[in-house]
Image 1 (cartoon, rainbow, N blue to C red):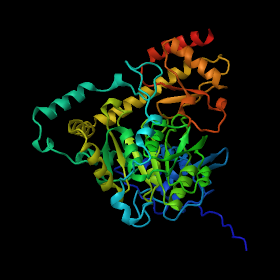
Image 2 (spheres, helix red, strand yellow):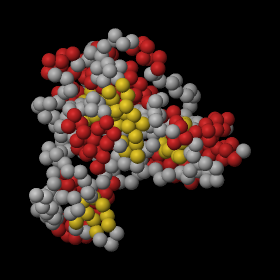
Image 3 (spheres, rainbow, N blue to C red):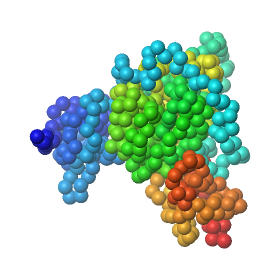
Image 4 (cartoon, rainbow, N blue to C red):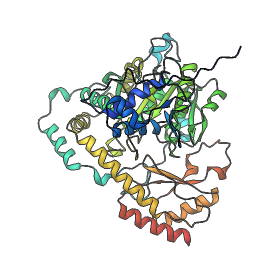
Length: 510
C-alpha cells in the first residue's frame, strides 16, 4: 500500500520565544531553522508574510526580513513570485539532524575499532613517504609584495599593525612566567575560549574551548587530519577542481585521492556512492576553492547523511567564510552536524595575514585529546606570544571591527574588478557575480586560450592563475573543460586593480 502523503502542518508561531535583550533577527532565524531541520516546518510549508509574522511576534518588520534573508541565503526557504515564501524541498532528514548542536554520539564514532584508538596517529612509512613527497609537494609561492591578482591574500594595507604592535609590546614588557615554559599543545585557553565564542555568535557553531586545537595555519590542521584519520591505501574524496595542497597532504599520508565533481550546488555527493571504501571527504562548502560555488543546503544534508551511513569523516575548510557580501556569513556544515562527523578548519590568515601562521581545528569531542597529543609530538605547542596577542585583539573588540572593515574593502575591490573587466576578448567569459570570498573564477573556452591569456598577463606584470592548475592529474574531464582564470581581488587597493586591468586589456587585445 502506498504511503499516504499528508500536507505539511500550517505555520504555528507557538513556542517561538525571543529574548528582547539580544539580536532578534538572529534568534528568529535560528528558531525557524531548527523547525525546518526537525520537521516541524515541513517542505512546502507556506510561511507568513514578513508583516504578518512581525505582527504575530511583536517584532519590527526589518527583523523578520533579515531572518528570512538569511534563511533564503542558506537554502532553507524559497520565494515563489506572487505566491509568498515556502520551506524549501529538502531531503528527508535523520531525526537526530535538527538543532545544529555539534554533539557526538557515544558510539560508532571512529572508523577504527576501539582497540586501535591508541594507534590513531600511525600512518605507516613502508610504502615510501619520501617517494610520495616527490609527487606531492607545494610549489613555492610568488615572491615580493602583493600584486593584482594574486590568490589567497587579504588586504594587508588595512591591518591595524599599530594596535598589534602595542599588544605585542605589552606582552613582552612584563611577561607572565607561567607563559614562558612548555604550553598546552592544544593552545592558549583564553584564545580557544574566544574562538568558541566567536564561532557561536558569528556562525551558529556551538562548540567549547575543549574541542579547539590551535594550529600553524589551515595547512597544519589538514595535515593533522591526514595523519590521524587515514591509513596508507585508504581513500579520500576531494573536490575536483579543488585545493591541491590539501590533496597533497592526504597523498603524503598514503591515501588514494578520488576527485568529486563540483557543479552549481557544490560537491556532487552522488559520486561518493561509487566508492564504498571511502570514509573521508574534504570540502570547502562556504566558498568552493577555486570555483566560488556555495554548497546548497540539500547537498550539505546529503553529505552529512553519507558520513553517518558510512561512519565517515568530513573535513570542512572554512578558509574565507568571513567574506560574504549579502547578509551574514553562512552557518557552516559543522553547525548541522549532530553525529560528530565534521572536523572544522578555520584560519586567521585571510583576516590578518598568512605569515601569522595561526589557524584552528574544531573537533568532535572524542578526537580532541588525540589531536592535541599528535600536535605535541610534532611541534610541542604553538608560539605563545602570537596566541596571547590574538586573544587580546579579540577580547578588546579589534578583531570584529577589523572583520567588518575587511569585508567592506573586499566588496569595494570586487566591484572595481567587475566594473573594469574586459568584455570583448574572444573566448573569455564575462565576470560572474561574486557573493563571497576573496577570489573569482572566470570561464575560458579552451585550454590553449587559457594558457595564452595567462602568459600575456604575466608579460604585462599581472598575476592570473589558470583554473587548469586545480585539477587532479588523472581527471577524466576533457582538458578544454578545465580551462578558466582564477583571480584574487582583495590583496591590493582599487587604484592598483584599475591599473592592472588597463594593462590586461592592452596585453590581451594585442
